[in-house]
Image (cartoon, rainbow, N blue to C red; front, side):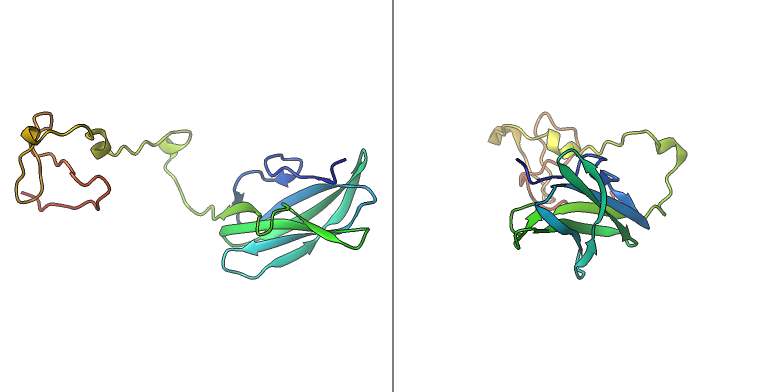
Length: 175
């Protein structure tokens, strides 16, 4: 039988499921097999900060499991990692997730940014047009000038074709 249940993508176990608006409270629940676990705790690791450990409170019984809850206050925007430390009734302990060094992640953001009304519900596309011109090059298609501009027959006059695909972009002076 499974000793615990936790799903970071389920409102039953984590609220909110997505990013957290600051200041805000992250509500975490975990189901632990009744009789096998005692004193579960949440360990929160702010990015670049010291670990904060919070004891979980008994919430309710769900079948063969006890449900524990913790309400963790997060005041500052940033990245946070968390995991659970559970002591067993046998004198040992385990973490959730179980892999050493693994943690769940939550992003906390500041709601102070304002957006224009027209953007709500919209989608913004950022198109890198230089990425559409990559193809087979023939030496006969190319001629270069001192600025590195190339003029293959399929390229519009004045356009720049980058021969170094991953190179840094550059600006030319206005003419």
